[in-house]
Image 1 (cartoon, rainbow, N blue to C red):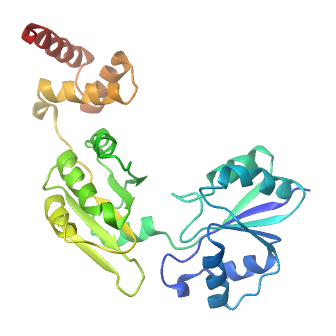
Image 2 (cartoon, rainbow, N blue to C red; image 1 turned 90 degrees about the horizontal axis):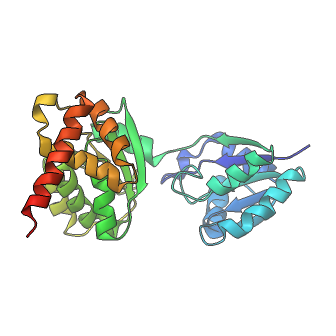
Image 3 (tube, one colour; image 1 turned 30 degrees about the horizontal axis):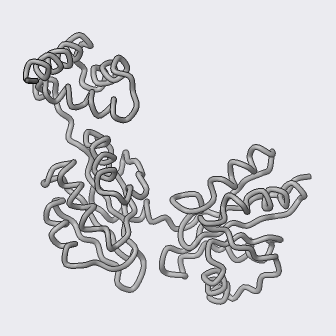
Length: 286
């Protein structure tokens, strides 16, 4: 019999939000893999739990090296509990490698649901929540960050991001450039903590606010793009959409077909716009 891997959601701020099952799983675990063993110690003290399982560190720096050791314990029948600093393991936190390796070995994987910064931010943002996508952390380099944002500039679902406080102003400014200065957004800071704050407004205004300096854990929620009809899409916009997809790795034929599908236009019309732009560029060359 193989063991069980338990992914345990932990509070994102207020320790009182810890799910009741968390204490029971901490007591039952034979191995506890923690992103930060010091934070784990503070959590168990707050919950009044005295663990007996072996505690090992499991963070970004040793995730690859430690995964085989934990899988070996699971295959041997151990109950392994994975906890990260806040929220659910694997969601922009260590855990994916271990889950994938455990599944490959036929190990049972289950979870203790807990607080989520993504869902909490969505709920309080005041933006549409019926359809959304989570984009995690953006690249640190300015060019790569702007490129990633431009890839989803036409995404109609609400977008959710995590960001470090010292990069918040640059990220909001890049969002204003990629999405438009008037796109609505919400910056959720220190959710469930003493100094919780939610700032709502156009991206340009939020970027100006963030330039003054912001502290704490940050989640950004951005309104999706408004639906545009075929009449609003001029040839230059069609060419831009094809180019964005090509830069993301799609072949031109596939990019043209995808843009035609998302705009409702015939593929021939999109193709003609791309060809015309190419010919115009060649004529402009000296």
